[in-house]
Image (tube, rainbow, N blue to C red; front, top):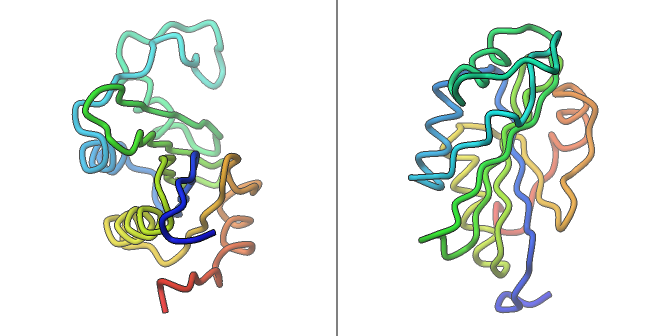
Length: 155
């Protein structure tokens, strides 16, 4: 790939060791302000899939406050989003979060967003993939697989 080649579905994933609703909102507001809220039927409670949440905030709070639960949320923004950024927050069953940015661009865009996400989250552990997110079972597995991942532009 050359630096100017257009790439669809670049996925940058970065681990943070603590679940936090405030951090989820901070990432959303940093990367896709005025994002589309997720549908209230996106998921139910961990112990009651038929439960209908009354707000996005209630939904996120439930999964942040419930220990040892796995849930991934994705947010989009359809207007004024040049790089088509989608934000993901994968709450892992060992109570950490892997944040992701999925977007279109080139290798320069890839480096920009990957480094920006790592710096914003003050994280040293991350990975870049294309089309499909990187695979991992939980935060410990993410660390094991990607802790030593260093890209050319990070050197």
